[in-house]
Length: 175
Image 1 (cartoon, helix red, strand yellow):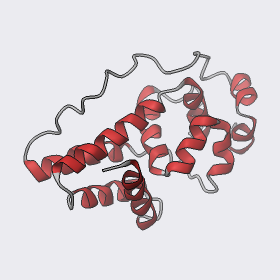
Image 2 (cartoon, helix red, strand yellow):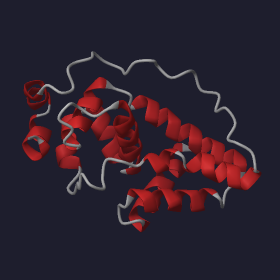
Image 3 (cartoon, helix red, strand yellow):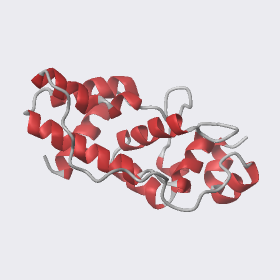
Image 4 (tube, one colour):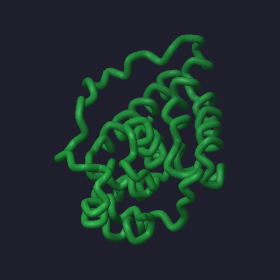
């Protein structure tokens, strides 16, 4: 599976789920079950590479603003947010990585009750692989993840800092 096929699965499942993250995860599993185990591993590898690319302080701050987390998003919430960001498709994902504040414009609709959390999507390849083979998903052969996010840490719960770093997001989602 190449990158184009990976994004096609993400995009078609999001459209079919009408943006519902849980339904999208189920649709991805269904789609992966139609593939061979090696392709499911490839999907998992593509997903994990992107999930790790989004392990970034700037994006973490943006997630806290969007999720209306007064103390900043905790690590688990940020993990699920990164899955959700991938679920939004290549344009939103890449745009958010380049400039997290641009998510204010890249996401016309955002419901903090539903959006920003797609942890189930992060497990879709594992679930499909196990259903196909009866065995757990093997090691993907990727280097160990970085212990700390990319970039320079900053206080994720400091409203002044967040308003300064993310003016568009703050205007749309800030308290």
